[in-house]
Length: 511
Image 1: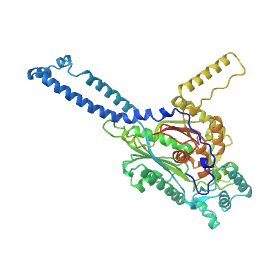
Image 2: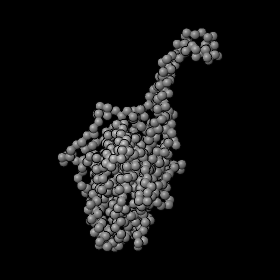
Image 3: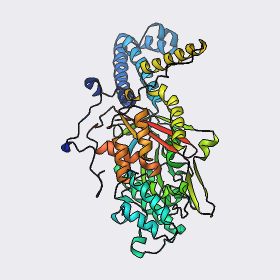
Image 4: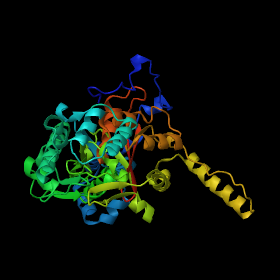
């Protein structure tokens, strides 16, 4: 995922980077027992069926030599007498019981597999340096020198690199020197360039044809045309007419986990079909189209969006067919959604107009505090699903001790125990919303530099690509990270924040 003109790779171990290893029992870590039980039990079921048929045939053959024709006819007529004679041996009965248990486990698994994913890599003509971006803003002829200086300072502290992507409608001003003409058609052109590219590559990686997709979910917060983005993709690739499509808008940077959970629920409506086959496939696309998202005013609370967001997108192919388990990259373990319900949370990322009727997205100064509270609520729901029992017991004990101190009227109470999620998850994909977001989560969760490396490198190389940023991070972990390389059985936590205010997460296991 290393980009031209980007800064050095944090994973470049040849330059003296220290190599870290996840603390794990390597011998047991070689085997992903959950994957074995969930994916390979269907195959064991068929082996068991074959063994049962062989045992029954052998048993019936033995009985036929021991019984006369008259006795056999009597046994057929009197079923109860047949049972009393115990025709079936204990071995056959045991096999039947084992098959029933295996079949029940396989039916209860109902897995969701990630077959492949791909992210958008912008052409060189879309990439600009910080200085070029400021010149693009200056060529709009609407910003004061004070606003241009403010955006320049924001860029210098943003931790974004010198080769991040903006759509052609904005970068063209570097050549023409005239303000951009923001039309609906230019936004549609950006959408086509991003969506067609990532969908084609994701389907190719998954070795699937467009007509094999049963569900299509696309999330894009700010651009929602008619016909929809789903209709655009369906028409271009020739999806089946009965492919169910869902277009999500206004869900912000946290929309990708929402789309994943929606796809998971849709796949549940088409059972995996074990043992007779069946199931379905879903395509999830996360992007943000920013050709129409430039703020053309001078109020500071709106100007941050002009330096924060960049072009990007990701396409993810999912399946709940148990036959796809052997070729899948990851399996979805959990998807957790949390949304704040306070006025403060609702208004901290707010699309509106300034006093001069210029449309933009206002970012509140309280956004970091709101994000922290919402993430805490998400982890309260996620913790019991992933944390070891010992960590959960420490949390319960901490609550009990604090309660006793309260009942005793003590003014000073011990701090609440913060569970160590590093004991439950090996890799973290923290939404690259900005350096402050990554720094804050790293500190509060006591993460190591290699845990946040993927997020920092994504911010450096691509900027904040909104909902797709967590997929650029997973791509970095999947293909490039050397300081904490991913292994089979490792778990990956994706954390995304968005307007509303929402904090959504997904946990995957590497297959």
